Length: 301
Image 1 (tube, rainbow, N blue to C red):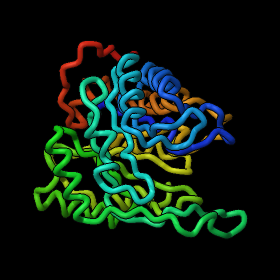
Image 2 (cartoon, one colour):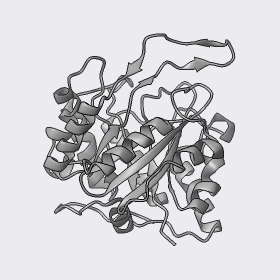
Image 3 (cartoon, rainbow, N blue to C red):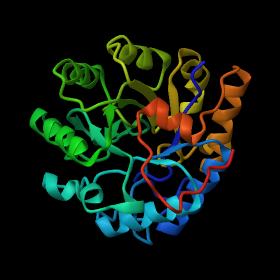
Protein backbone atom coordinates (compact mmCIF):
# COMPACT_ATOMS: atom_id res chain seq x y z
CA UNK A 1 0.00 0.00 0.00
CA UNK A 2 1.38 3.42 -0.95
CA UNK A 3 2.30 5.42 2.15
CA UNK A 4 0.09 8.42 2.86
CA UNK A 5 1.62 11.83 2.22
CA UNK A 6 0.22 14.39 4.66
CA UNK A 7 0.49 18.00 3.55
CA UNK A 8 -0.28 21.09 5.60
CA UNK A 9 -1.66 24.50 4.65
CA UNK A 10 -0.67 26.36 7.82
CA UNK A 11 -1.93 29.84 7.02
CA UNK A 12 -3.14 30.68 3.48
CA UNK A 13 -4.57 34.21 3.91
CA UNK A 14 -6.50 33.34 7.07
CA UNK A 15 -6.67 35.77 9.98
CA UNK A 16 -6.96 34.78 13.67
CA UNK A 17 -10.49 35.78 14.64
CA UNK A 18 -11.76 32.19 14.43
CA UNK A 19 -8.59 30.25 15.28
CA UNK A 20 -5.67 31.93 17.08
CA UNK A 21 -3.18 29.30 15.90
CA UNK A 22 -2.66 30.69 12.37
CA UNK A 23 1.10 31.38 11.96
CA UNK A 24 2.15 34.60 10.23
CA UNK A 25 5.82 35.44 10.72
CA UNK A 26 8.65 33.33 9.27
CA UNK A 27 9.58 32.13 12.75
CA UNK A 28 5.98 31.23 13.61
CA UNK A 29 5.52 29.36 10.34
CA UNK A 30 8.78 27.44 10.77
CA UNK A 31 7.93 26.41 14.35
CA UNK A 32 4.42 25.38 13.30
CA UNK A 33 5.67 23.33 10.34
CA UNK A 34 8.29 21.62 12.54
CA UNK A 35 5.51 20.53 14.91
CA UNK A 36 3.51 19.26 11.93
CA UNK A 37 6.54 17.32 10.64
CA UNK A 38 6.93 15.67 14.04
CA UNK A 39 3.27 14.62 13.78
CA UNK A 40 3.72 13.11 10.30
CA UNK A 41 3.48 15.89 7.69
CA UNK A 42 5.96 15.81 4.82
CA UNK A 43 4.81 18.70 2.57
CA UNK A 44 3.82 22.30 3.21
CA UNK A 45 2.14 25.04 1.19
CA UNK A 46 2.49 28.41 2.89
CA UNK A 47 1.83 32.09 2.19
CA UNK A 48 4.35 34.69 3.32
CA UNK A 49 2.72 37.16 5.73
CA UNK A 50 3.67 40.37 7.48
CA UNK A 51 3.97 40.54 11.26
CA UNK A 52 0.33 41.68 11.48
CA UNK A 53 -1.00 39.04 9.07
CA UNK A 54 -1.22 40.96 5.80
CA UNK A 55 0.06 39.27 2.61
CA UNK A 56 3.79 39.80 2.05
CA UNK A 57 4.62 39.17 -1.60
CA UNK A 58 8.34 39.90 -1.34
CA UNK A 59 10.76 37.14 -2.38
CA UNK A 60 12.87 38.03 0.67
CA UNK A 61 10.06 37.08 3.06
CA UNK A 62 9.46 33.83 1.20
CA UNK A 63 13.17 33.00 1.24
CA UNK A 64 13.47 33.74 4.96
CA UNK A 65 10.49 31.52 5.74
CA UNK A 66 11.77 28.65 3.60
CA UNK A 67 15.24 28.80 5.16
CA UNK A 68 13.82 28.74 8.69
CA UNK A 69 11.59 25.78 7.86
CA UNK A 70 14.52 23.88 6.39
CA UNK A 71 16.61 24.58 9.49
CA UNK A 72 13.90 23.05 11.69
CA UNK A 73 12.71 20.00 9.76
CA UNK A 74 12.74 17.95 6.57
CA UNK A 75 9.59 18.70 4.58
CA UNK A 76 8.89 19.41 0.92
CA UNK A 77 8.10 23.05 0.13
CA UNK A 78 5.32 24.19 -2.20
CA UNK A 79 5.06 27.92 -1.39
CA UNK A 80 2.43 30.13 -2.93
CA UNK A 81 3.32 32.37 -5.82
CA UNK A 82 3.03 36.12 -5.26
CA UNK A 83 -0.49 36.28 -6.66
CA UNK A 84 -1.19 39.94 -5.89
CA UNK A 85 -3.87 41.84 -7.82
CA UNK A 86 -2.56 42.84 -11.24
CA UNK A 87 0.91 41.35 -10.72
CA UNK A 88 2.67 40.38 -13.96
CA UNK A 89 3.87 36.79 -14.22
CA UNK A 90 7.51 37.73 -13.57
CA UNK A 91 6.60 39.26 -10.22
CA UNK A 92 4.28 36.38 -9.34
CA UNK A 93 7.16 33.97 -9.88
CA UNK A 94 9.70 35.94 -7.82
CA UNK A 95 9.34 33.75 -4.68
CA UNK A 96 10.59 30.86 -6.85
CA UNK A 97 12.94 32.45 -9.37
CA UNK A 98 14.68 34.77 -6.90
CA UNK A 99 15.39 32.14 -4.24
CA UNK A 100 18.21 29.62 -4.23
CA UNK A 101 20.13 27.27 -2.00
CA UNK A 102 18.27 26.27 1.14
CA UNK A 103 15.38 28.61 0.26
CA UNK A 104 14.71 26.87 -3.06
CA UNK A 105 11.27 25.22 -3.14
CA UNK A 106 10.59 21.69 -4.33
CA UNK A 107 7.38 22.46 -6.24
CA UNK A 108 5.98 25.16 -8.49
CA UNK A 109 2.33 25.66 -7.55
CA UNK A 110 0.07 26.27 -10.55
CA UNK A 111 -3.66 27.01 -10.41
CA UNK A 112 -5.03 25.29 -13.51
CA UNK A 113 -7.82 27.65 -14.55
CA UNK A 114 -9.86 30.77 -13.88
CA UNK A 115 -12.37 31.34 -11.07
CA UNK A 116 -14.62 33.85 -9.36
CA UNK A 117 -13.10 34.04 -5.88
CA UNK A 118 -15.78 36.06 -4.06
CA UNK A 119 -16.88 34.31 -0.88
CA UNK A 120 -20.57 33.55 -0.34
CA UNK A 121 -22.29 34.31 2.98
CA UNK A 122 -24.88 31.51 3.41
CA UNK A 123 -26.48 33.10 6.49
CA UNK A 124 -27.20 36.39 4.70
CA UNK A 125 -27.64 34.86 1.23
CA UNK A 126 -25.28 37.30 -0.45
CA UNK A 127 -21.71 37.56 -1.71
CA UNK A 128 -19.23 39.34 0.55
CA UNK A 129 -17.48 40.97 -2.42
CA UNK A 130 -18.22 41.22 -6.13
CA UNK A 131 -14.90 41.78 -7.92
CA UNK A 132 -12.43 39.00 -7.03
CA UNK A 133 -11.37 36.99 -10.08
CA UNK A 134 -8.37 34.70 -10.56
CA UNK A 135 -7.12 34.17 -14.12
CA UNK A 136 -4.57 31.66 -15.40
CA UNK A 137 -5.01 31.18 -19.14
CA UNK A 138 -3.42 28.52 -21.32
CA UNK A 139 -0.47 30.72 -22.26
CA UNK A 140 0.20 31.30 -18.56
CA UNK A 141 0.06 27.57 -17.89
CA UNK A 142 2.67 26.98 -20.59
CA UNK A 143 4.90 29.73 -19.19
CA UNK A 144 4.64 28.19 -15.72
CA UNK A 145 5.47 24.72 -17.04
CA UNK A 146 8.53 26.21 -18.77
CA UNK A 147 9.58 27.82 -15.47
CA UNK A 148 9.22 24.50 -13.64
CA UNK A 149 11.39 22.84 -16.30
CA UNK A 150 14.09 25.54 -16.13
CA UNK A 151 14.32 25.43 -12.34
CA UNK A 152 13.96 21.67 -11.91
CA UNK A 153 10.74 21.97 -9.89
CA UNK A 154 7.92 19.44 -9.73
CA UNK A 155 4.61 20.97 -10.93
CA UNK A 156 1.96 21.10 -8.19
CA UNK A 157 -1.27 21.45 -10.17
CA UNK A 158 -4.28 22.77 -8.24
CA UNK A 159 -7.75 21.96 -9.56
CA UNK A 160 -11.01 23.48 -8.31
CA UNK A 161 -13.39 21.90 -10.85
CA UNK A 162 -13.70 19.12 -13.42
CA UNK A 163 -12.94 21.71 -16.10
CA UNK A 164 -9.58 22.37 -14.47
CA UNK A 165 -8.92 18.63 -14.11
CA UNK A 166 -9.72 18.12 -17.81
CA UNK A 167 -7.31 20.96 -18.61
CA UNK A 168 -4.60 19.14 -16.65
CA UNK A 169 -5.36 15.99 -18.65
CA UNK A 170 -5.03 17.95 -21.91
CA UNK A 171 -1.65 19.41 -20.97
CA UNK A 172 -0.46 15.94 -19.99
CA UNK A 173 -1.65 14.51 -23.30
CA UNK A 174 0.19 17.30 -25.14
CA UNK A 175 3.40 16.46 -23.29
CA UNK A 176 3.62 19.97 -21.83
CA UNK A 177 3.89 19.01 -18.16
CA UNK A 178 7.55 18.41 -17.29
CA UNK A 179 8.27 15.10 -15.54
CA UNK A 180 6.27 13.82 -12.57
CA UNK A 181 3.52 16.04 -11.19
CA UNK A 182 1.12 16.38 -8.28
CA UNK A 183 -2.58 17.15 -8.74
CA UNK A 184 -4.25 18.82 -5.78
CA UNK A 185 -8.04 18.70 -5.74
CA UNK A 186 -9.15 21.80 -3.82
CA UNK A 187 -12.68 21.17 -2.59
CA UNK A 188 -14.83 23.97 -1.17
CA UNK A 189 -17.18 24.59 1.73
CA UNK A 190 -20.44 26.59 1.57
CA UNK A 191 -18.55 29.90 1.39
CA UNK A 192 -16.16 28.89 -1.40
CA UNK A 193 -18.33 28.31 -4.47
CA UNK A 194 -15.42 28.30 -6.94
CA UNK A 195 -14.58 24.68 -6.09
CA UNK A 196 -16.44 21.39 -6.11
CA UNK A 197 -18.23 20.80 -2.78
CA UNK A 198 -16.24 19.07 -0.06
CA UNK A 199 -18.17 15.83 -0.35
CA UNK A 200 -17.44 12.33 -1.62
CA UNK A 201 -19.41 13.19 -4.77
CA UNK A 202 -17.34 16.34 -5.28
CA UNK A 203 -14.12 14.36 -5.00
CA UNK A 204 -15.27 11.49 -7.21
CA UNK A 205 -16.26 13.95 -9.96
CA UNK A 206 -12.60 14.94 -10.18
CA UNK A 207 -11.35 11.37 -10.05
CA UNK A 208 -13.62 10.37 -12.94
CA UNK A 209 -11.62 12.71 -15.18
CA UNK A 210 -8.13 12.22 -13.74
CA UNK A 211 -6.06 10.44 -16.40
CA UNK A 212 -3.95 7.40 -15.66
CA UNK A 213 -0.46 8.77 -15.98
CA UNK A 214 2.89 7.54 -14.69
CA UNK A 215 4.27 9.75 -11.94
CA UNK A 216 0.96 11.51 -11.23
CA UNK A 217 0.00 11.62 -7.55
CA UNK A 218 -3.18 13.22 -6.22
CA UNK A 219 -3.78 15.00 -2.93
CA UNK A 220 -6.96 16.60 -1.54
CA UNK A 221 -7.60 19.74 0.51
CA UNK A 222 -10.80 21.56 1.44
CA UNK A 223 -11.04 25.35 1.59
CA UNK A 224 -13.60 26.64 4.09
CA UNK A 225 -14.62 23.05 4.87
CA UNK A 226 -13.55 20.17 7.12
CA UNK A 227 -11.31 17.84 5.12
CA UNK A 228 -11.25 15.44 8.07
CA UNK A 229 -14.81 14.40 7.21
CA UNK A 230 -13.43 12.93 3.96
CA UNK A 231 -10.17 11.56 5.33
CA UNK A 232 -11.27 7.91 5.55
CA UNK A 233 -12.51 7.92 1.94
CA UNK A 234 -9.35 9.58 0.61
CA UNK A 235 -7.15 7.12 2.49
CA UNK A 236 -9.19 4.20 1.17
CA UNK A 237 -9.01 5.42 -2.43
CA UNK A 238 -5.23 5.76 -2.31
CA UNK A 239 -4.99 9.55 -2.38
CA UNK A 240 -3.09 11.91 -0.10
CA UNK A 241 -4.37 14.62 2.23
CA UNK A 242 -3.57 18.27 2.94
CA UNK A 243 -5.01 19.81 6.10
CA UNK A 244 -4.53 23.08 7.95
CA UNK A 245 -6.09 26.01 9.77
CA UNK A 246 -5.18 28.13 6.77
CA UNK A 247 -8.05 26.43 4.95
CA UNK A 248 -10.55 26.06 7.79
CA UNK A 249 -10.50 27.17 11.44
CA UNK A 250 -12.11 23.92 12.68
CA UNK A 251 -13.97 25.76 15.43
CA UNK A 252 -16.32 22.78 15.83
CA UNK A 253 -13.25 20.73 16.80
CA UNK A 254 -12.12 23.25 19.41
CA UNK A 255 -9.77 25.38 17.26
CA UNK A 256 -6.93 22.83 16.99
CA UNK A 257 -3.36 23.57 15.95
CA UNK A 258 -2.05 22.44 12.59
CA UNK A 259 -0.04 19.69 14.28
CA UNK A 260 -3.19 18.38 15.98
CA UNK A 261 -4.92 18.22 12.60
CA UNK A 262 -1.99 16.29 11.15
CA UNK A 263 -2.15 13.89 14.10
CA UNK A 264 -5.84 13.30 13.34
CA UNK A 265 -5.10 12.42 9.70
CA UNK A 266 -2.25 10.13 10.74
CA UNK A 267 -4.55 8.32 13.15
CA UNK A 268 -7.12 7.75 10.38
CA UNK A 269 -4.42 6.25 8.17
CA UNK A 270 -3.11 3.97 10.89
CA UNK A 271 -6.60 2.67 11.65
CA UNK A 272 -6.92 1.84 7.96
CA UNK A 273 -3.57 0.05 7.96
CA UNK A 274 -1.94 2.58 5.66
CA UNK A 275 1.60 3.70 6.59
CA UNK A 276 2.53 7.37 6.92
CA UNK A 277 5.04 8.60 4.34
CA UNK A 278 8.52 9.53 5.52
CA UNK A 279 10.23 12.51 3.82
CA UNK A 280 12.04 10.10 1.49
CA UNK A 281 8.76 8.30 0.73
CA UNK A 282 7.15 11.66 -0.08
CA UNK A 283 9.97 12.59 -2.47
CA UNK A 284 9.52 9.32 -4.31
CA UNK A 285 5.72 9.47 -4.41
CA UNK A 286 5.55 13.14 -5.42
CA UNK A 287 8.43 13.03 -7.89
CA UNK A 288 10.93 15.28 -6.11
CA UNK A 289 14.69 14.92 -6.48
CA UNK A 290 16.61 15.52 -3.26
CA UNK A 291 18.96 18.51 -3.72
CA UNK A 292 22.20 18.81 -1.86
CA UNK A 293 21.64 20.67 1.43
CA UNK A 294 24.16 20.72 4.22
CA UNK A 295 21.80 21.64 7.07
CA UNK A 296 18.74 19.54 6.29
CA UNK A 297 17.33 17.95 9.43
CA UNK A 298 15.65 14.57 9.57
CA UNK A 299 11.91 14.97 10.02
CA UNK A 300 10.44 13.62 13.25
CA UNK A 301 7.91 10.85 13.20
